[in-house]
Image (tube, rainbow over all chains, first blue to last red; front, side, top):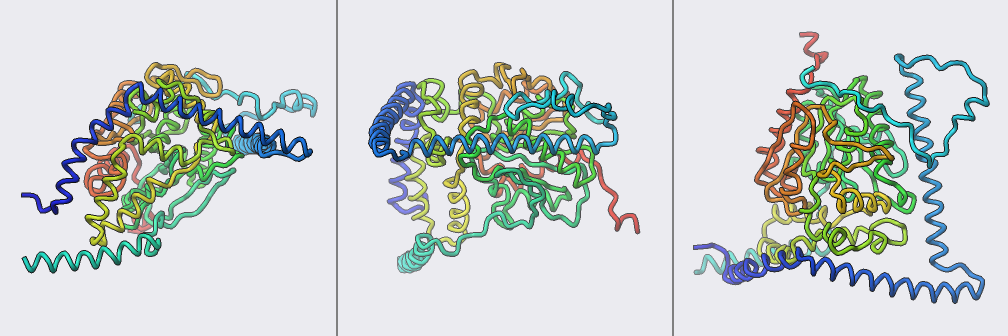
Length: 137
Length: 359
């Protein structure tokens, strides 16, 4: 016989009956579709309300919350670009310090500038199709 | 009968005391206590180096954590810490912690982590340790990041790769993935003002996986509220499971598109920074650890991984534990950690310490 108090035994029995059904329910396509629809409706309602309030603030020539959000996004993107540049610079510095790196051929300032890339462009590709260190070596 | 009444009275008094403590938030167990130093930082990301006077194995071990939760689960409380056990076993442990993303991280894609942060973290570990390789270790979604890294950087200085509770078949991730794959929900509809997926959405997503768990949790808490040890462990564990961080918006979009809708890991349709990558190209010694009772990353979601990776030296460990039980608690201390340590030791070099030299 279980040591658990009666209320606990009753709860466990109810939980055992309900939990599998609830877990199956949340795994049905209907639940996923329903959740997506509810979220879409919420987004739509929030977006409409935001548009109305933004128009009101703009009438007074004042920035709305959505303007601030956009600015935050732009500052965030700029911050990320700087971070990525910093990381690339750090990697270049480390590679330059590495003893097995081939010497950089002398070049003019212009030729360096030709190779300059914006931080948002694709990174230099890592070496491809080179076998990794085999096991046990 | 009298004994039972006495026991109930005592327990109710203890319940009242512990209940007040819980509500007031006092006497919380300290988490993430193992001494460490921040040895590199970029944006919100930090590389931590855990102090260890007794390093007996090399190369150093770098842990890459998940993007949506806090890393202190790996160093929960003194005596119940995965990191502590790694240090005691003689490893030199580093951890890449992503911090708490804000609007500056909203544009971070998976390639930021896979091609920028992880390589930079590894470079820093190599620089500090003087080693020429690292042992890489990924937890949960951090495991996916390490898989993408190893697949995209085929000349990566890796001695071995170990992943824990790492999903690859996202069809089995339950409602968390189904709302996007089946329901057609867009990531943009759940983004907060900072452009990231708010922690509340992540927590809600996890709660949906076991809808009755929240009620059971409080019932069990009431039942065992008199037990000091249980309350301390409840505070630490539930504190962590409710304590998530925002998921960077662009990384969330890529995850849903590539990993959830296209099921890219399983279907070999992965791209990182514009390059096609394949898990088959991973050739380093590999260990995947799965939890059979994991309701967050179900065993079906982790099972195919062993066959997807191309390593000739690959192993799978399947344990009767839950998601957190892999790294904290008795099962972890008894089974998971010793097995992982054994795998790592066999693929590490024993270092000659100064004391051994003198002897």
